[in-house]
Amino acid sequence: MAKKTNNLSLLLLLFSFSIYAATPPGLDDIDSDLIFEDRQLDDELTYPDWFKLPFGNLKDNLKEATDAGKKGIITYFGQKRCAYCAQFFKTSLADTEIQNYLRRHYDVIAFDIWGIDDIIDTDGKQYTEHELSIHYKTDFTPSLIFYDAGGTPVFRLRGYYPPYKFRAALQYVTEEFYKKETFAEYFERANTGDFFLLGGLTERDFFIPPPFDLPLLQKDKKPIAVFFEQGNCHTCDLLHSGPLEKDLSIHELEQMDVIQLNMWSETPVITPDGVKTTAREWAKSLDIFYAPSIVFFDPDGTEIIRVDSVTRFYRLLGVLDYVNKQGYKQVSDYQRWRLQQRKVSP
Image (cartoon, rainbow, N blue to C red; front, side):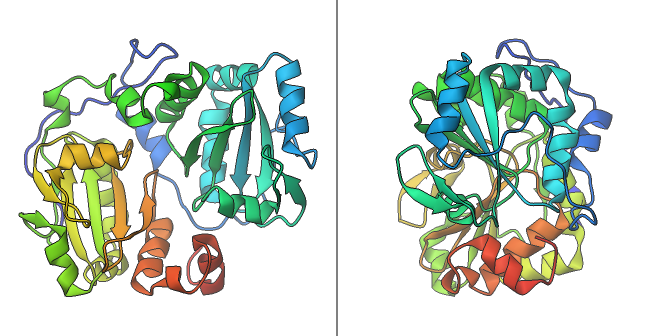
């Protein structure tokens, strides 16, 4: 069972379109954004009517957007029965403020990650839709790739994020903050300080206590799962009280070495490649910008996959299964592994 190390009050920040003006969302609003059934949908999704289809050459889509005075294009990678895609449409894209801001600055070009149509990317290379989704490592749908006016991919969002985080990502790219800082650094500037950052974490029996010497753990020849969390984190609480309370999830995690780090702390860590650092600096070097994020390493210390967006039970279970069964050694990408397994919804 999960338990809290202390009961500090929740402080969650909601970005407006100025980074310095933030309004905390209520818990009811947050929960409605984050708690949903993530089984495969019964009915196929319909794109918003303002999404655009690819012309075949993304340079043509980009030209149409920039001729209309827009900053660039966003390629959307989804699936027809994806519950996370449906939640994205229902929350962020249904928000009038977000939608208006998005449409003012970008054209959104829709792709199905299983599509077979040929696409020429802005660098002139040709792919099928599925190959393009692999190229941009869109392990989780929905995924978004932001292109600037020159056709350069400048930012990727992989998975579903609640509206306040998506809103921040939009401004991060549109105002070109990516040219001088990571998204993690950008978002950190809206946090309220150590009281918010260093509150208690949720303790679990499967977490290995310090010291956190990952090369030493590699001698166990098990996968390593590193949970990056933060104090007073409602999204972390929902992961622990939901997906991580399931027996199937616990069973999979018990086959790994699992550690938990406060992503803002100075806790000493030795990384898989032997670097002595702190949890804060390691999270920064990995560009961790969402709490909770889980990064999985193979027994040799190579990153396998990470979950750094909203994750409900079936998505989490699929990733745990992929790691423990070494699916990454058998197929070229995570989505194909999930399709082959057909044990839980993709």
